[in-house]
Structure formats: structure tokens, C-alpha cells
Amino acid sequence: DFFGGGGGGGRKRGKQEKRGPDVTVPLYVSLETIYNGEVIEVAQRRQVVCDQWEECEKKCPKCGGQGIIIQTVRAMNFIQRIQTACPECGGRGKISKGSCDACPQGQFETEESDLLVDVEKGVPDGHSIGFDGRADENADHTPGNLYFKVKTLPHIRFERQGDDLHHRMAISLGESLLGVDRKVEQLDGRNVSVKKDGITKPMTTMTIPGEGMPNHDTSGTGAMIVTFWVDFPDSLSTDQLRMIQQAFGTGGQGAEDEEL
Image (cartoon, rainbow, N blue to C red):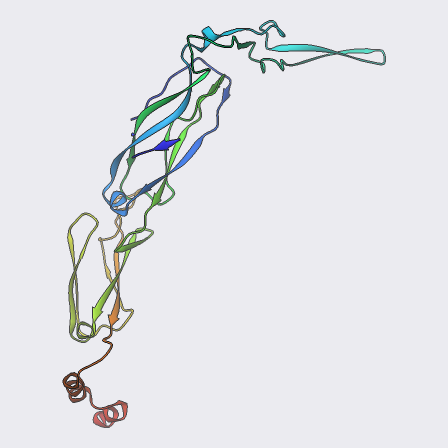
């Protein structure tokens, strides 16, 4: 059971044969966190065995504290002895005394602690960050591991694809004809220049090397890929229409005649 936004640790108990199940929980993080790297503090609430629980137990009367019982099976002229786990104590050899002052809440209690989850630069979506032995405790079981699975939240400016950052830029009709000179705020707060001369057709892409995501496993960095969307006006004034006609002609046929 988790809440809030974390340091490691945990109780160490005696050697036990069985191990409890691992637990995986999602860790929702922003694209800025993955780009820059961040240590996130997470509060954990988990089930632990009461430290004094041994004082609240007694020897199982059914198996005499052995944890096993011997059953005799007779068949024809044969006698077979079968050893099985004691059904009363589950093979532990001990059972609860009942009400106990040492553990007033029973065998289990709730432990609250902080974990420091280190989200490294460039980790891929779905990456797991593990803490050994931090799952719930159970009697006669070593606790399993706790894993945080990185889940990237949607971003207002970028979409991550591998190590590349994709950005959609809406430009005016004038910019599509005369050139683009814009800036995009990078995930670390810097302004990245997006400059393109000449005509820019709708859905044209521009690649800016080195402005993508850092690669988690290498020292490499992806690219920022800008896709231009032309924001056409809903209408034009009479003067605007006249200027366009003067610049480009009245239509496709006029343009062809002019070229000829």
C-alpha cells in the first residue's frame, strides 16, 4: 500500500527457507524528470511481523513443536508411514497463544518508511527500480523485493520516441512562405532555436541533433524532431486578397501562362 511522493532499509530476520512474492508498483514521472534525472522521495506503508511475536507463540500441541505429523496407512499386508506438514500450525511447530500484550495488534503491524527512488537520466518507459526485501513480511518467509516501474506522464510540448523528442510547431501562413525563426523550451529550461529559411510546406520536419533524450545506457543523445503545421487563416481581407493575386496571379492557369 503506497501513498505520497521515499530511503531504503528494512528489518533483517533469521534465515528462512521460503520467500514472499515480489511487488511491482507504478511510478508516474514527468518527461522533465527522465531528461534531467531526479531522486524522488516515496512514502511506503507495508505489513511487517511484530518484533515480539515469538513471545506470543507456544508449541503446537498437535505435532509437539515438530511441524510435521506421521500418518500410518495400512494396505493389504503393508504398512506405510507418510510424513506431512502439521495442519494445525502449517509446519511451523508453533501456534498463537491468542491475546498477547507484546503484540496487541496481532502478528502483523504496519510500518511506514521513506524510500529514495533514483530515476536516472534517460531511463526508458517501463524501467524497473528495485529495493531488496521491501515487500510485505509474512511469517516464516523472507520478504520479496519491491519494484517501481517507471510510467511517463503525457507532456504538453514533446512526445518521446526512443531517444528522440518530437515537437509539433504551428506556424502562420506568412512564416510558411517567408521563413521560421522560433524557440522551443527544452526540458531543462533552455531555449532551443528553430530557424528555417524559405518556404515550409505543411508536415515538413526539421531535425536538431543532440537535443533529444539522453540515452540511459550510453553517453549518446537523441534528436529533437520538429514537425511544422501551417495555421491557415479562416478568411482574407480584400487588401490581402489583392496582394496575394499580385504576388502569385489569379489562379493556376495564370501562373502557368506567366511561366511560359
